[in-house]
Image (cartoon, rainbow, N blue to C red):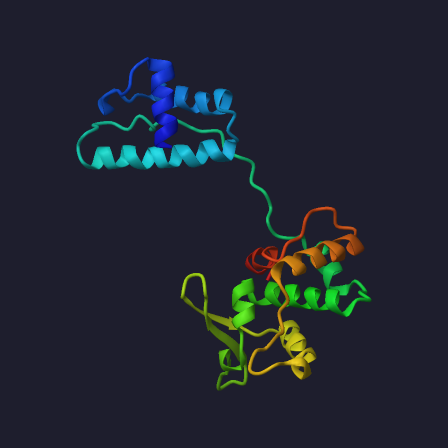
Length: 216
């Protein structure tokens, strides 16, 4: 963002720098246009860059360097939001489609398990018997620290993931709940399943977490 701002000031103002107090709405709007038209950035990139510039301006205001916010009336064009989760119809097809290959079927089951628990790939690989806890009322829960954030997750085990756990119980090696294959292989298999279901959009393993957050 700093480099883009320097380039913009040099090209449009013919100087190396300008005082922060000269920052006005016209500067923001011209910088916005510079990124969209001359740099050919996407609306998402422009929005991301503008957010960072806003933070610097807010810091300048809090320190008393600026008396007014030049962003006050600036309304950026919002990038179109992409739906990152599957539709319920697509998920139903994924769960019910007949799959001949045992390996591909295993990928489908892991994807569905993650959809109903929200577990990331790394956490699925780490998931072991010690993470399964039974409450006084008989309900089963997954209690595991996320590898990415080290935050503790408490996830209720619903019927579907319980059935998947039972299905692969006899194949366990040691205390691990599942024998996970490489993520790249899983994503290849997911494309095969999507084709069987007539789903044209790309399906990746990470999408299961978005399914959990939205559908489950």
